Length: 371
Ligand SMILES: [Zn+2]
Ligand SMILES: [Zn+2]
Ligand SMILES: [Zn+2]
Image 1: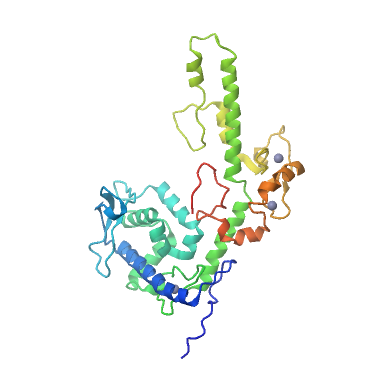
Image 2: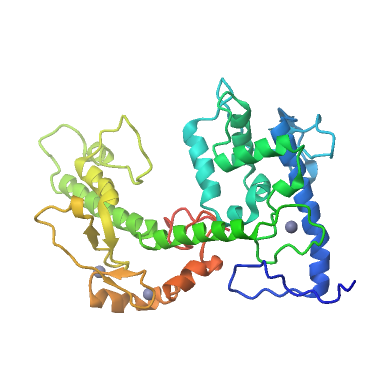
């Protein structure tokens, strides 16, 4: 039997970038990958079997930790020795369930992450432990669900099959290097991987058709700044104001809210600030020129007085929209570095997307997540 010829496997179905590690490097990787996957598989089994306890975990001094932290220990799990998982925020409610809003956020985290899709459940165990373990707590509560149907189904099948590894998607199979371990016991389902990949690409196409959070936030901040400046102007140009209050206290009472997400129910919102934040939901297109940020509203949000502005679209990428030729010309220097590529090339290129399903550089610039 000859193992001499070992080419890059055909099941590496994705990623346009070429990735060609040496043969020796691949061999070393095989074992490492398998060890990693097996370790995670055991965490998965312990999770499904509820072989864990919530407990304060002693500090790991070698990592500079000084205090015990809440975590999970796996003393009752015997097939493998599992290190405690510490420092994750677990927050079950009285009845052991997790708040439905949180479960939704966790679920979306995994759904929108191409890395989670390609690595499957084994990937999720370590990469977002807080979400994973909270979903597991929910699964063992009266809610009896992880929040992801596919996982619930998988858990049942695993229990019924006495934890057959062949049911658990291989966490390396669909990824860039592929799984090269000849005896890999985990599931290699090429069709399912291709379907999952297509879902990620579809979500990216949809995202590219929407105005970006970056542009919307920038526009909101501009408008708020202008509104504040105008308010201050009124106070300052009217020193007596016919009122008893000092200028300082009148200035102090002016709008301070500066974030769409800073919602405080008791706060009585200045109508202009409410208008500025309310606009977000009505924007169909926004001019990508940062000096302009003109908007085209959605059909149902337009009033008669609104101009029926027609946006122009960058003919190369079909992503960037502009209110005028002038805006496109003056924004080209910035836009070409985004980069401006044919639409499908942007969609396919994983390097341009973060693991939250958002194109890099298009989020609110104040909250930049590192990869
Ligand atoms: Zn594999
Ligand atoms: Zn373009
Ligand atoms: Zn413009």
